Length: 212
Image 1 (cartoon, one colour):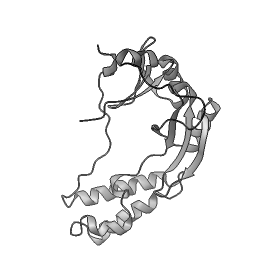
Image 2 (spheres, rainbow, N blue to C red):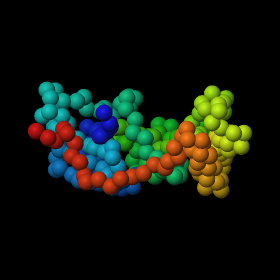
Image 3 (cartoon, rainbow, N blue to C red):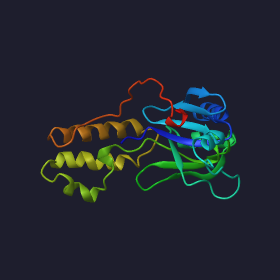
Image 4 (spheres, one colour):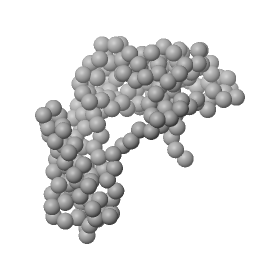
């Protein structure tokens, strides 16, 4: 199986999609008036469905999100180049601030807010996640492929990990280069294939919940 859609149930799907387009810079894929709106988010789609559509699909529908108390138990994480700026834009647009931008142990910077127009969904703005070579702590490198890595390759990997905590303005490009070099060095041993995320253009897909 693969993940095809992440769907939030809301009062007005079209309004939720317009808010995401205006605030987060996502592009609307298509809208079915009064029922469903879908964002163009690559192979895995983000959609907004109406409470009425949920009730039509199964008895009782879904429980509407309330305006009080903690947000629902689902998080939608959006990747941003500048987390602080993205967080401020969201708050200025009317999002409920939950957690100001904070540096995490693995080098990421994360902020959280709730969007009232999207059923009070919990959202996180995250800077670009680390590549494969930077996900493991330094203490585990020797146990991953002990015979596949030379001393110079290990040094490059260690630099890649540390680069995740470097200054996020002047050293961002340098950190990306180091990470790519680390993957390419490991790939030369034939044990790991260097790759970059790719985006394949596809025709818009409608959510299964719309099919009768």
